[in-house]
Amino acid sequence: MATSLQNLSDYDASTFIDISEKRFGLVVADWNREITDVLSAGAYDTLLKHGATADNIYRNTVPGSFELTLGAQFLAQHDEMDAVICLGVVIQGETKHDDYICHAVAQGITQVGLKFNKPVIFGLVTTNTLEQAWDRAGGKHGNKGVEAAVAAIQMLGF
Image (cartoon, rainbow, N blue to C red; front, top):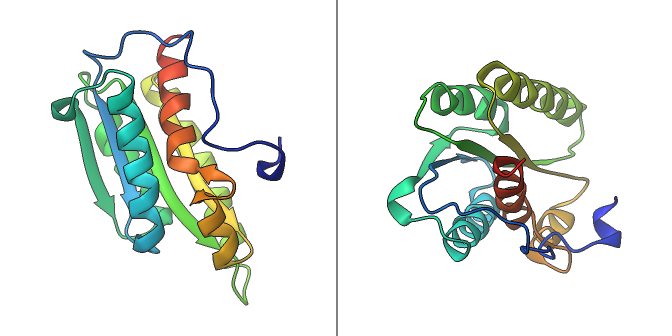
């Protein structure tokens, strides 16, 4: 569903499992840091709101969105890590770099989840403009970080 049709921060928590003992890794791209910090805060606060403890949430930073995949793998390879949430922002520029990055990150994150048999969540904001990115980082379309944390909780209950 298109983000314009549903707020990223709207969800039903009635079926969430107890996550008080679960460990979460946040992998956050440093590129577009002003926005990724907001996404990270949204994910972190959502995990806390639903029972995770601060001691069980590990935030790691990678240089850019392309590096999210390897950062996710570094965390996912640990047996004690229950879910990994990848957060980044790719804004279309004058070249096609965004197509290559988004495709590589989507495939890479999928492969990491399959390899380690645990939720590895795609929390990548992909937009045409900076304004659209802010709209998905707590703006009129909600916060992609919240949506990513919710997806991690839901997948742990699968």
